Length: 355
Image (tube, rainbow, N blue to C red; front, side, top):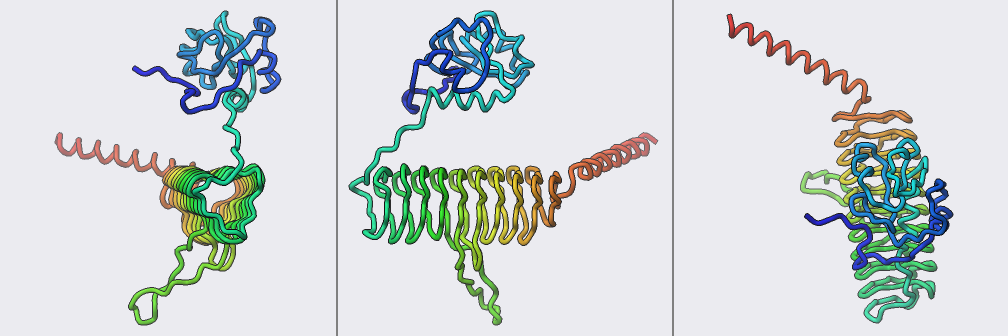
């Protein structure tokens, strides 16, 4: 059986070692009297494999048995689990252990630095404006009047269409295609994503001989600090813009149709699809494989369950599941009722057969 490994040096850049004082400073947690002063740590590792010079973490009490047998030099965890840390380890207690873990993992495994310059195989239109400290990878194609801000990394085989604007510190993965888009700062787009292509706009012809394509004349506007997962697609607007609000996170294989507007910090999970002209308020969560009809309004803070089919507006802070989607309590009340009816029918059939 292959043991779990965090930060395999074949794939992830390493930094360190770091003294405990640097780690505590970075993540803002407290170490107890077992800290051992300036003890050095060389990296992070899962509880099962961590050694005395490595840091691990625990967020779920169901794995407490692994914790009690761990050899990790220090463990990041919730205060309620601190008493489980074995005597040879240093508890690093945080009320937000996942955030603290993210910071310590980034300390030991910082992202690779941008390598400024344009690869000789890239094709860049002379009118494009690219910050001198940006990295342009192999076989990238950059169209006319493109603007790319400082410290960006554009991966191999990326296509950037005419007029696109990309803000500072963007990370664009391989095989991404972008057109008709204005992109904010610190945006990450993972490999294979497609931004700005035609929306699904057409109408039947009067003679019923086919369809007439409706020109898609809007744009895609991406706010700051957005992440867009691999193979996700965001269509440009038809007559207005498709908007992804600042801080939002799109998982892999998400479809955002034309004129959709997402508020700030929305979360859209894998294989979800949002039909045209639907708007989502701030902090909406859409679980995997959920689908939404067009021209709906999903209120701020609403939660859409996995595989839900949303066909009507959703109130702010509501939670809905099922297809057609309805409030969680109502949905499970109906499920319970149907189960009771089935049991009664089965019992009645058994009594009839027995008679």
